[in-house]
Image 1 (tube, rainbow, N blue to C red):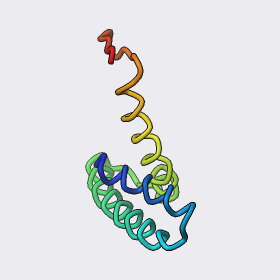
Image 2 (tube, rainbow, N blue to C red; image 1 turned 45 degrees about the horizontal axis):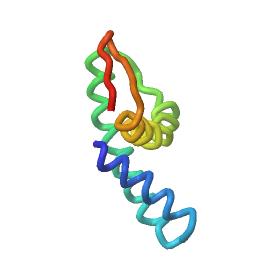
Image 3 (tube, rainbow, N blue to C red; image 1 turned 90 degrees about the vertical axis):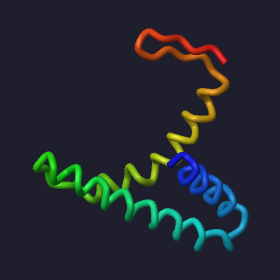
Image 4 (spheres, rainbow, N blue to C red; image 1 turned 135 degrees about the vertical axis):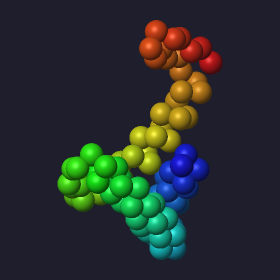
Length: 88
């Protein structure tokens, strides 16, 4: 999951400088979005909820950037979680 999200962020950065990478970015993003929609549909069905496709689309746009940023920063910054402290 982190690799796929990293690929999307990397392709986004490359697409800003070279338009030839846009098809790769869109293909990766649509593939990830379809997998996420299928997996979350099962969860929504289990909890008898109706999925909001628009909210899922918005989250799918920002989630790769967020998770890659958290993953990279967590290796360099101190943090605590559930009263456990981590020092790099």
